[in-house]
Figure (cartoon, rainbow, N blue to C red):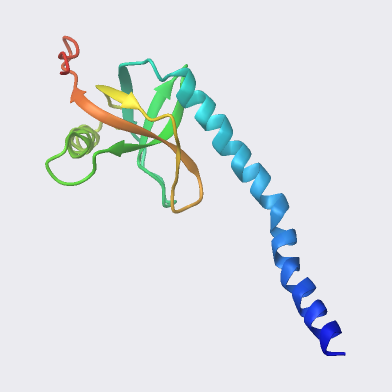
Length: 140
């Protein structure tokens, strides 16, 4: 009787793991697709960034790749970083009424992706320089 109770307890503990498996595949499939986008643009050196804040808990930035906008985390984060400068400049343009403003940056797209708090997969871009309208500065 005791062995049967242990076996039943063990089998019941497996049920939640089995029930959640179908949800993992589509979630991972989205990450795989986004990683393929990142891989296709791994050699790119310049990127067009725009700010497009939304009410969900995800990055407010988007990067344009092959004509499509993708949510992107900008790195490094924190005060006095190029990522913060991108935010300040784009917010200033929005305050002037230019909500569709973009900035061209020199950077490196990560080959991996990161999940946002709202569970959306997002690209990761390390910002190396902010380009002037005349062009991008060389990066050492």
